[in-house]
Length: 235
Image (cartoon, rainbow, N blue to C red; front, top):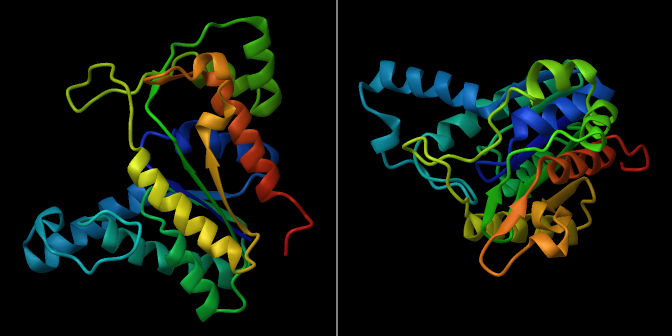
């Protein structure tokens, strides 16, 4: 089974969601960020042009530029791992819902489940308060080693391009992804699902202008994504 996690940037897919899934089902993992770095270098080597400045073929739900060759490279990895019948998890923003569905239609032997994540409004990341309850939640969801060696050392704040703490808002792109996922699901594909992190924030922290996102909210979302991926009733 190939598990895919797509969505908008800033979702902590590699640092929270992926470890949560792999703590219960260890498997090969990769990121479209790494694939992008490889394909972009290859593109420059062949053309001597920066892919970020090139007009690329438009792929629905993808940003223009480097994400196009990154998705093409990801297609190759998905097909390779599926042919080898290996469980694998690939995460990153260069995973378009309609692109994944097209792969399914082209290859009836492809076994894939796809989760997409986003924010329905502006959010602010809150520095964790290390209560016993939060520590217990992380130990249960991911593990004690993750808590001690990563979670307490990780900078949870979202930062702008200058490295300053900043609210995060990519709700317009998230809406496009959500709409694409829902269109796929309406065609009968229950192996696709969209997760809005706003749904995991208690109403008293959603606010008028921005919602306050805590680490425990993200952990709870990650566990729901894990349950969706590992649900044996899905075909």
